[in-house]
Image (cartoon, helix red, strand yellow):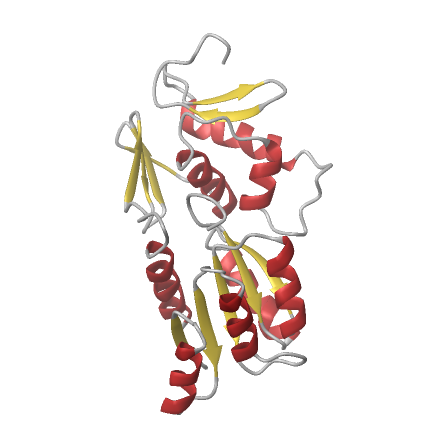
Length: 235
């Protein structure tokens, strides 16, 4: 896995319109999504990026999904793979699973079923993902994506939630801009933008405003830290 938590997905789908629609839905659920339109592009993407999950169509140009899956497993990759295909014959499903896929979903599928299967695969990672995270009096429900502080709900956008989730999975650790960009945003992120700073400020207002204990802090020149208690002297 790329890191504790799950945020970055590779969607391998050769129909650009279908890929964009599905990616949009996933991004609205707080996932960062990269798209590959063929098998060779998928293997290239996995060689330069770390992914927490791959959604892999079977019928692809250049190299099909079965070949991509076999190649990844042969190289020692343990990333969870969910195959998506219109082929519903039993032997097709068996072939996909034997190639190393972790699950198989037949098109057309219900988006909510896809999300449920994704959550199930992500929970099977090297570290069992908690259903809820507690940071001082902050509670993050990883299933419902609900957030509360001192029992009061906090309304977050999908990207704000993704950023808070990532920081919470690295509680009391300094997280730099590069790490946040890699795991919370996708390949379209502009490293010269101030988006991360903007979202940190939004989170700080929503999470810390009105509370004497400030959980979200900035370490100049280093990054950001979500603290479980009182700050260190240099924070």
